[in-house]
Image (cartoon, rainbow over all chains, first blue to last red):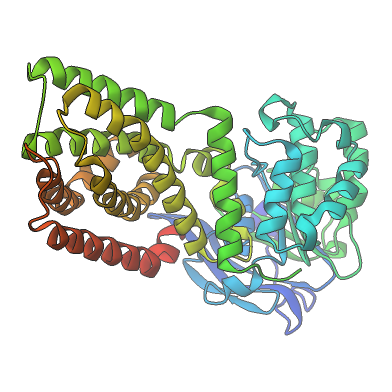
Length: 251
Length: 228
């Protein structure tokens, strides 16, 4: 059986940083104190494509997303997001990125509608985004619960609101960290089309569902525990055995 | 989508904070209760029916200062625990909008506190209320200083596990100049026999200088403070 180290291979043309990549990472390192969480990560995500980020717990997937989201500074290496070099030009990239992470980024003592209006004001959406908010709430079937305090909603409902928040400003780059968390199959069916590939939208998707992740992706970044790259390249270059090996042989 | 002005972002964050405070009543009622309780303790601890001059100024200002710590400790709780820092940093707004909004919220909390605490102080300790109206200018300038410094320190402490300890430990020494200047002005205004205005303007100028200095420091460093 292949192990994680055996699938290390040179970057393919598809994965090497390109001039028109929406996200380009070259030799990215990120450490917390003395502990490196990401080690020499190099990958490029062309505009309009989807990158699946795979790896076991502790591989640095969430940290990678937070660096790309401009929320963490790279310790070393080059990071370019939507043509902006980070961290120097982070302010130019902000507002064009949508993040759906482990935290819903919603205030519990505001209602869902109040949270979304607050976000709309921060993003400068005309009319406080009233039309867009109504459309999104309707799509996730939360219109009737939109005026309830977030603290009184179930985790699944909060996640649906978090999807609305992430999409409110129609981001060019969508960063999704386990987007199906807390969602039952029906709710997952509602939000998946909203979070899916769309013209002009680049996506980075962190998932443990290897099969679904690969099916939706154009390229793959597989990280080992400890944050080094096991594989970076097109989906077609990764066999099912390689994918299993990323998780140490687990299915 | 257009990039909102810093003022629009500041208004949005301030409105959000005031809405949450009105809904939860987590800061201002606790501050007011603390202040009134402290006056009761001073009333019986000092065994005095009236105060004037430096002692009156000290009791009032120390009470307001410690009540302010309650609000300063809570200022970034929602941002820390509910992802507000990330939500705001993902948006195309200056970090200084967050600084300004939090400082404005704190000034509003302090003004509401003082609208309750100063009359209570008068009832407990003052023979004459003639020094109270001009005291408003001193308190407002002291509030601005508390807000400018408090928001900075609260931001630094927000992500620390020892934040409840860090805020008073770092903030109180920084606020010594505010206490000296505010007490210097207040003791003249609360003097026995009616307010005196000797030296009040000089102390007000010191307060204004402190406020401007810490506001400028805040605007200069806040972007860096919010980075990881």
